[in-house]
Length: 154
Ligand SMILES: [Zn+2]
Ligand SMILES: [Zn+2]
Image (cartoon, rainbow, N blue to C red; front, side, top):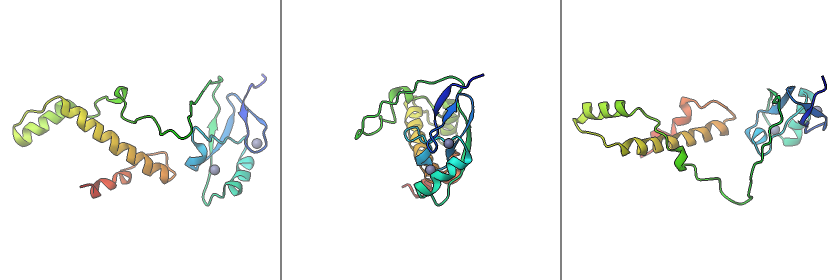
């Protein structure tokens, strides 16, 4: 079976076939959607590390998609990213009944429905910051410690 080239190795320029293994850099600025460095082998990745002047980087094994995806990233240089709290992104992140139970157990008060949305927005903002912290740390897992900034919030 002939492999259809998916994309080219950033080091040796050899094609990486659809469905074949390739390697990305563990540094988040290198494996982002926009930069998207891909290497056909660990040795090609090794040539990238000194060029990019990484102190600490690892090759992450990935598998190329089986079908060609047409990803067109509409990037307008200089414009800020799309507003994070768009309307379609306003799903409730907390369980309304639990929140209402909690508030009534604490105070005997009722909770209006809009509170869920406000708190969900707050959680989204906290999560965005935690994601940024994880990314700055070179991780792809958000951990408890990424929320430590909450302690300093007033
Ligand atoms: Zn290569
Ligand atoms: Zn890199």
